[in-house]
Length: 251
Length: 124
Image (cartoon, rainbow over all chains, first blue to last red; front, side, top):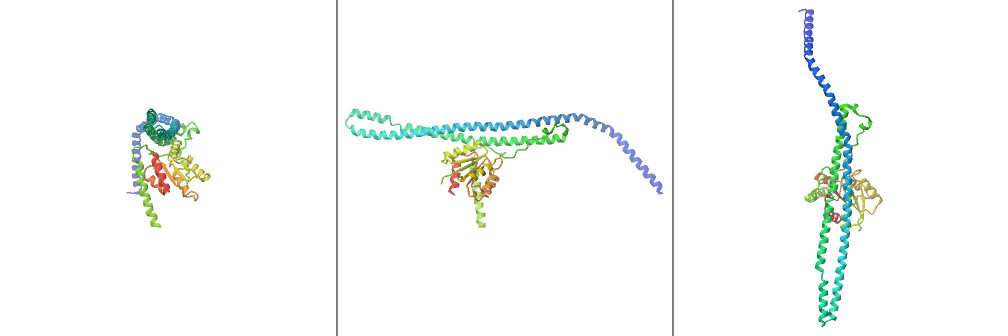
């Protein structure tokens, strides 16, 4: 075959290919039209989603601020409770002091009565009165009961004080939630930028709240019944022992 | 020797609880700080402080950073430091011990636990 015939064959082949492309194009036109129509329908939806995201995002600072207010309010309330506990403890201390004074006075009165007894030997009537007085001032048992009650109340106030540590733990949990929702705000901001940055009204909208520093324990839990300290102590002991072994090796 | 405690915690409630516990167990001298940086300032101005009780999670400067700062300063490196925190997992405890805390208490604690740890540190 000559070169010109070979070239003609190639041209015919290419024309067939072009023809196939046109035929494929014809088939694709309805698909493309459908796609364009879909996109046209989709744009309002995207705008709606964008609006919802922006709306949600704008509410986050308020939610975050409310969480902070909850933490502050509970801290204030806890301070008031601790003030009351201090007052109760102070009063209990005063009662204890009064009790001690009472015991001292009873003891000195008992000594005086004993002296008196020696001076009224033989006087039956006076001795009977003395016995009655002795019985009246024998309130040792009642004193002990009151002291026991004071100890019980003190133990209860100690328990309340311990339970109030829950405030610090919940404050850390709230801080963790706060951090999470501000992170969501940042993510939504990024999403909005990607969807349609023109939807932002101005610079203020773009200025997202800065992610707060992490100064909370997200895993903080209140488990007063568990022997958590015992577990901590055993870790501390074993770690300190290991460190001592290492120190010995290097000394 | 008269003990003067530096109680470091960003929570007012926790500072109050620690201070009340200290009073209950017989220690009445204390200074409060709301974060690690505030604690450093207090240590620089009050030479009478000879025991530090610190939380871990605090803004500005954490208890762990405070511990490292205290241990790296010749004037304060010998101070007893008791870490009182919610962080109870082994990795955290090891990290605190590596920073040279004297002992470690997990919240919530009882007055007895705090007393035992203070006594233990002082006896060493």
